[in-house]
Length: 367
Length: 174
Length: 99
Image 1 (cartoon, each protein chain N blue to C red):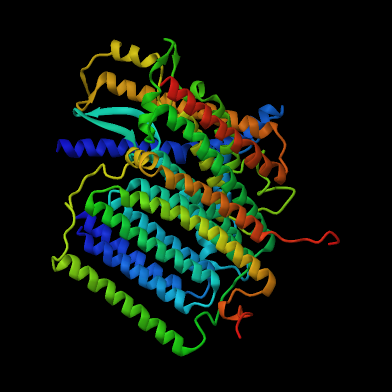
Image 2 (image 1 turned 120 degrees about the horizontal axis):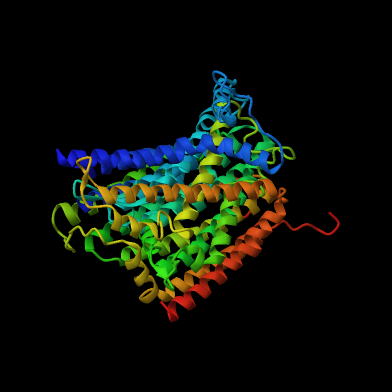
C-alpha cells in the first residue's frame, strides 16, 4: 500500500509539472505576447474577449484563439499527400513535447521516507536525449512543407530546416562547455552541481562560469525555434512560409509547437545557466526554520516546503527568460536569410569552439 | 518480462518497416520507413545497455543523415514510381534467391554457434553501467585516440568532397 | 534476452537490405538500403559488446556511424551531380560506360 501511495504521488507531481509547463504556460504565452508587445509599443493590446462581462485584461483571448482554430475549416489541398499532410503537425508537436521529459523541476521529494527525483524521466544521458529530440524537430517542418504540394511551401520548409540544422550545431558545441565545467551529462546532476557558492556569495551558476556559452545558447536557441529576429522561414508578410497550406487546427498545432519550443529552450537555459531549481540562500533558511515532522501523513514538512519553493523558483526563472525572449522579439527587426546563415556558421560556431578550448584549458589547470 | 515484450514489439516494427522501405512506391515513404527502423534499432541499443550509442545513433542517423536523404529526395522531386524494381523478372527472382540464401546461412550460423552450444565466449551477464557516457569517453580518448582524430580528418575531407561535387560550375557569361 | 535473438533480427534486417540493393532501380533507395545494412551490422556489434561485456564493440559502432555519415554526404553529392548531367536517378539508365 505504501508503495502504491509513493507511486501515485510521484506520478501526480510529475503530471502537475507537465500540465503546468505545456498546457498552462502556452495559452498564457499567447497572452504575454500580445500584452507585452502592447506595453512595449505604448498601446492597449487585445482586450475585447469577455465572459459574462469580465474582461480579465484580455486573458480570454487565448481561449477565443483556440476556439477559432478549432472551428475553422481544415481542408487538404488538391494533390497533397494526405497521410503526411495530417501527420506532419502531429510529428512537430510530438518532438517538442518529448523534450520536457528530462527537465528537472525540483530536488528530491521525500514521500513516506523514499526519495523521489523531481524529473519526469531520470536519464543518465539527459543532455544527449535533448540533442536527439532537437534533431528530430526538423521533420515536422520539412514533411509538412513537402506534403502541401506547393513549391513555395517546399522552399520555405527547406529554408527552415537548413536554418534549424545549422543552429543545432552551435547549440551542441556551446553545451560542451557546460559538460566540461559540471562534469556530467545528466541534467539533474548539472543542476545539483550549481548549488555550491563561489567566493562565498556567488552561486556556481552557468551564467557566471560560462557567460559566452550563455549568449551563444540563447542566440542559437532563438534561431532554432524560428522566433523573430530569425523567422525568415516563416516570413509572415514578406515571403511564403512552410505552413501556408495549413488552416484551422493544423496551423494551430504549428503555432503551439512554436510556443512549446520557446518554453523548452527557456527551461533548458534555466537548467544549464541559471541554476535550474536552485534557490540560493533560501533553501538553507527553510531547512533550518521548519521542522522534520510528518505533514499530511506522507511528506516531511521542511522537505515539502523546500520542494514547492524550488519549483516556484524554477517557474519564476523560466518566466524571466521567456520575458527576455519576448523583449528581443519585439525589439529587433527580422534578419535576412543570408545574415542568419552567416551568423550561424561564421560567427557562433567559431565562438563556441573557442569557448570549448578556453574552458578546457581553465578546467585542466584549476578544476 | 517487460524486456521480452519490448524486444518482440521492436523487432516486429523494425522488420515490417524495413520491408515497407524496400517495397513502397514513393521514395519519401521509403525514407520515413527507414526512420521507423532506426527508432526501433535505437530501442534495441537501450535494451542492450548502450544508452550513449542509442543517443548518438538518433542524433547522427535520424537527425542528420536521413534529413540529408529527405532534402535530396525532395529537391530532385522524385514522385511515385510505377517501375521501381529491376526490369527483368529473372533478376528479381535471382535477387530473392540470394536473399533467402543469405538469411538461411546467417540463421544457421547463429544456431550452430549459440543454440547448439558450440561457442560460448563471454559471461553473458547484465551490468547496468556498461555503456554510459564517462566509460565510452575514457576509451575514446585513451585507447582509441588515433582513430578518433583520423575520423575528424575523414569528416573534413567528406565535407570538402561533398561541397565540390555538388557545386554548380557557372560560366562567367551565365 | 539471449543474444541469438538480437543476432537473428540483425541478420533479417541485413538480408532485407541486400534484397533492396539488388532489386530497386532508384539510386537513392539503393543507398538507403545500404544504410539499413550498416545499421544491422551496428546492431550485431552492440549485441556482442553486451554479451562479451566489453566496450570496444560500442566504440566500433561509434566509428561506423562517423564513416556512414561521411559516406552518405559524398554519395548524395555524387547522385546530385549525376542527376544534373543525365536527368535520371535510375541505375540502369546510367550506362554510358557500357559497351
